Image (tube, rainbow, N blue to C red; front, side, top):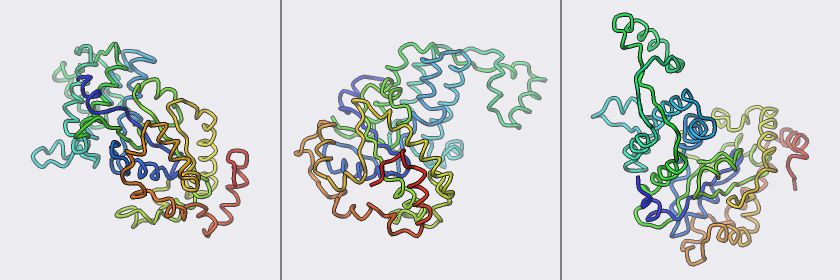
Length: 351
């Protein structure tokens, strides 16, 4: 992997996140109006970093708390994750089709699997065969029984390919890999590349220590409107999500008001730690009601100019979005809204 992928294609990366259905799409829509910002579709989440078995877990295993067991396990989990993320329906390859789960990273980032193989080859110091019982911890019952039986007849089956990774320069290699993948989605550079929910806002300092060329915009919203938006269903959704009861996908445990409130208390408890030069916190309501003020903050934070804003109001028009403020006032859940106000008093400043 070459540094040129970063230098030629990406100025830097910006992640947009929120505290559970907080309306971060308005920032995504806003940035989509700039000619030098690349914004993928809003329902596409970049999960290589935060997913279980992802790069942040691997960083923990190889850099923060190295052991040979954790190092080997993190590589196994990441290989499995990337196979699942990259795979697409390919009738010429039954194995790929069986692994496909609808993420199709190889479509969004042409060359994703090749770059991933290069990355793994760089971070694996060497591989050797030996007895390694830890692999069996993740095996299903059939694989476990098959290994026991086959090893009785062929002793070599008891041995595993063991991955040894010393973690040397891993953070730099991780950066080249991640920004290299983003570059695959950019036809001409340099650009600012946007992701949705690639970082977890609950451990911001750790992400910023690892990702050297990234910033984050975090959107917060009145929890009364968050609740209302979930239980009434987002009327802008389409396809599968429009046809089913919103409590089926049950974002933030909103099908049970007490669980929802507990969930919100935990999320809101992290707000005091939302302080970093590479982080900009935006209130959903403020961006709509004080558009020019917040717009200037975003442009200053990202180094954008008004000349870049070639499609202003095309995707985010505050005059239209204002109807999404205070939606709890028109809901049929007055008892639940009152409980949210009572229980979250001191955790959130209600206006």
